[in-house]
Image 1 (cartoon, rainbow, N blue to C red):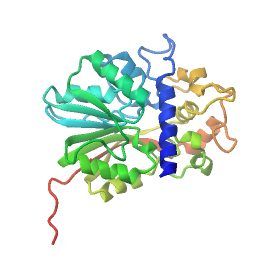
Image 2: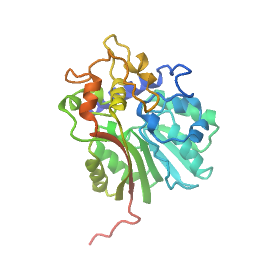
Image 3: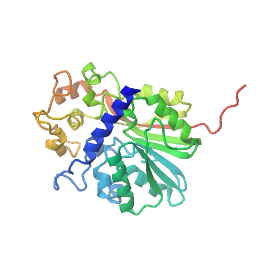
Image 4: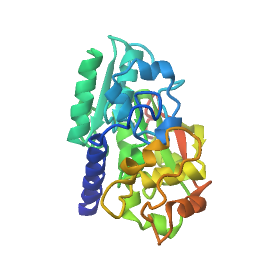
Length: 308
């Protein structure tokens, strides 16, 4: 348990630092610019982003849009695991309307403060955020219609508990749709590099394990609905965004922020070597094809089978 708490503390500190990092300079891309590297190919529409407070957009670090093409309806209750600055909570609140509710769960105070401010800026009255960890959700049993999450569950040190919590809080027939990083056959240097955990790399499990974990939790109709595969340059920038340079400055702040499109821009040449004395570019070559974002759907059974 102590190790799990250490991981959570490390993740919380990393994202607290990220949300307090200055935004990118005007002129690099269309404003507002999202700080997260892979979020730039996450599937949000221009209209969705323009309707949100700039801070919610800038401080998004996801790997997909869990609400894209979802069947969320007016009047439903949606909970977002690891809600960050509130981008998906705000989109969900619009989808469910005044008769519905959008609830964000996050363990990082700085993120909760940002989300609450963004909810207020947006003038949204049917959304809230609560402090908590995703392995022990501050929600009642069978209380939500949808669980969504965006590149967060991979950070959990106890994924089976997260899957069990999703099953617990969903109403009978309730649904889950999450976007998350999955990986397979990663080099030992990646798996042993603790610095890569917060960048959603070394803590990721395989897609097959993800699907099986949800089934083991009692969910059904589990399927992968979409995949986003990253190229070498995206992976290199992804790695550098979380690895501090030798002088203590973050690689992202120093220059990787120019990676604001899918074009090849692999960051500063003097970025710290992330694992096993390999450069981020060399490491990215070994990871290509072994790490991607999956959008995973699952549903809670409409009724519990009677015991014989």
